[in-house]
Every structure is written in C-alpha cells, then in structure tokens.
Image (cartoon, rainbow over all chains, first blue to last red; front, top):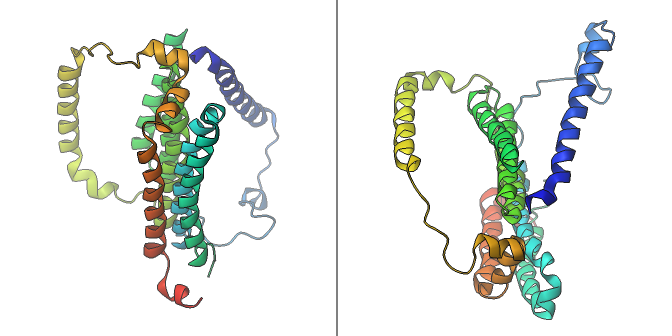
Length: 118
Length: 173
C-alpha cells in the first residue's frame, strides 16, 4: 500500500527542509571574514597538496565490481527474509546452496589475494 | 493525494534527468542520476510495487551508480572534456531527438494497454504483497533459475579477479 510509505515521504521532506533551512540561515546570519587560510580546503589539518581531480588507482575498480556483485546478491535475500517463516527448512536449505556457491567465489577472491592491497 | 505525489516525483525525475545531461561536472551528473533513480523508486511504490522500489534503490542507486562514480574516479575526466568533440553532432542530435519524441508520442500517445490477465492481477498482488508474491514464486517454481543466478554471480566474481588482478601477485602466493 503506497500510504504505508507516507512516513518515508515525511522524513524526506523533513530532511530536505532541515538541510535547506540550516544552510540558508547560516549563510544569511553568519559573519563572513574570509582570509586565505580560511578559504583553503580542509584536509584533516594537513596543508593541502595536489589536485582533488587526479586519477585514482585502477585497484579500486576491483573493489567496486566485487561490491556490486555482492550487492546484487543482497536483493535475493530480501524476499527470502520476508518469506523465511513460510519457507521453513526448505527455504534455509535453498538459500544455503545459494550462499555456498557464492562462498566459493568469496574464498576464490580471498585465495587469489583480491582483498590484498599490493 | 497519490496523483499529487506522482506529479511531484515525476517533476523531480524529469528535472534530475535534465540535470544529468546538462551539468558539466560528471560528479554532479552522477548525483542527478541518483535522484532520478530514487524518484523512480517512489513511483514504483505508488504503483504498489515496493519490491521493485527496493530493487531500484539497492541495485541502481546502490550498485550501478557506485560503478559510475568509480569510473569517474578512475578516468577523472576534466569538467570540459568531450563537449567540443560533440559540438558538430549537436544539430543532428536535436533533429533526431525531436524525431524520436514525435515518433514516441505518435505510437504511445494513443496506445491502450490490454487488461491484465492471469492470476497476478493488481488486486491479488495488493492483497498478498508484491515481495511475498515474487518470493513465493522465486523460491518454489523458479528455484533452479534462482540457484543458477548464484553460479552466474560466481562466474562474474572469477571474471573480475582474472581480468583486474595482476598475474604476478597471484604467482607470489
């Protein structure tokens, strides 16, 4: 029922309104005395170096694709979790087989050093 | 009420889609695309299909968009790259885009969807819940395709390692 999702809509409206009001109020009422040091990007207190638009190591691609694959796996858990009680032991076994096959992939990635940062 | 919410999210989706195309900074485009995906999820909820809404948020806004953001990170295109090369195509693009729009309106404008047939009428799905309806079929009648999906994902995982991981680091172990 779409009406059941009304709280989410209310939350979205509140979040957007809160962000908009907080940013608008602080930009309207806050004092502004910019200096060169204040306008610098903040990098955990270190002096900033280099451009933020530089290219990032291709190694992250492995992380990204592995994340996507295991994220797709999650979408199958959602209807399974909803129906868990009705499916009884049969549901547990079939999800067990599903997870076991993916566990082979997980172990493969682990053994091949997919989680290492060399 | 429901119609009002539909128009709200339809407007957000169209504006965000326009922003995705028009904005120069690729990261801003990706954020606009996220907004499109979330608006579409809201529309699925309005169509009494919360499972598709969740899938939309998790797969599209979660996984696909992450892939786009990673590609932006890896390629790091300048904010003005690529636009110059496409300038010559602009006239043609507008022409063909307009032609496609006219064609879509001509074909879809007068289209009438056939009435729903089979056991899964909107009322039946609304009574059972669409996640329950999907799950009940997925874990009984379509059990084999479901288990084969895990093999498909396994092949993809192995493929990622074979393609993206350097050979030398494997032989080191």
